Amino acid sequence: MVKKTAHQKNNLNDSKHFAYSTRNLWAGFLFGVGLIAFIDETVFHQLLHWHHFYDKSTTDIGLVSDGLFHAFSWFATIASLFMVADLRRSSALWLTRWWGGVLIGAGSFQLYDGIVQHKLMRIHQIRYVENILIYDLVWNISAAVMIVAGAFFVFRTRNKLQQTGVTSFHE
Image (cartoon, rainbow, N blue to C red; front, side, top):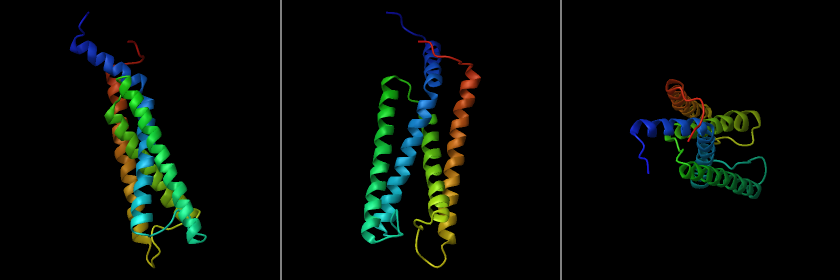
């Protein structure tokens, strides 16, 4: 059996990172969407009772909409974890890029929720109080911070690939 040198192992890791870079990003993105939806559902819907996913009808309909939303978050999280398991099996999990995807997914979902669902569709608000502005600002600014932080990680990994000159996968 031929033992690989550290340089050969690094090249193999870089090649796998390149080959699976998109899958690492999507696995993280999906996990981020599922995670932030789970936190929203658990904290704001169930523990604080600030709103339901759909508040334009009865409380019963609101609870059903929360159940569907919770199922969505669970499906996204489990699907992403299957992708992570496959990446680990292939020795291609790239945590920096995956975390970038997590932050972009979580921030994108939260920003979509804050702008589209809260303001454009008006299916619910964060909280039903007179001065909602501070809640909207905290919600949307924290989403933007997550997106920027995630983009930083993704660009950092992209730059690493460009610096190593890996252009294809060869095992």
